[in-house]
Length: 44
Image 1 (cartoon, rainbow, N blue to C red):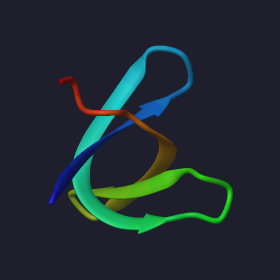
Image 2: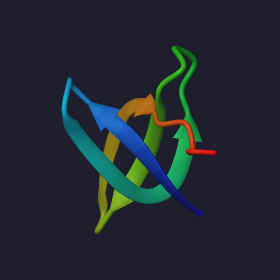
Image 3: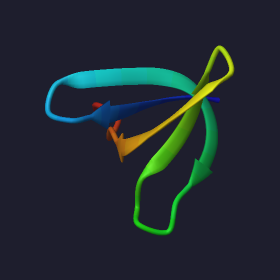
């Protein structure tokens, strides 16, 4: 499942969901690289 996270103040990364971290951040995989950041809520 694709998820979007926020890195810093203006960089968004979209990738395959890996895990939720204990501090509330989410990890996603992009071409073998794992990024962790704040999850972005879906728009309604």
